[in-house]
Image (cartoon, one colour):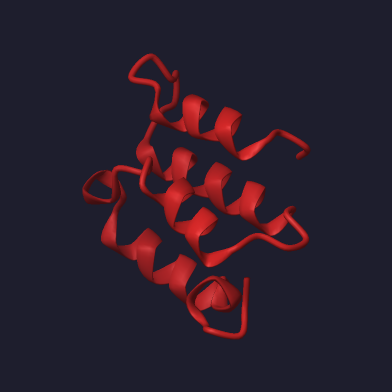
Length: 77
């Protein structure tokens, strides 16, 4: 995904985004982050700012935490 950060933020923050559930927004954000070779912690936080985490099922958040270790470590992205 070669979309610039500003563009992905516009897409994810849109109230008109047509998704079935907020989990799709979260997974899109994660996929975009994982395709950025040298993304900063600040940019990761900026992307996640547009995910409505209270709307993501708790089990999904646990799965993301377990499967996406690099997003939650100081040595990761």
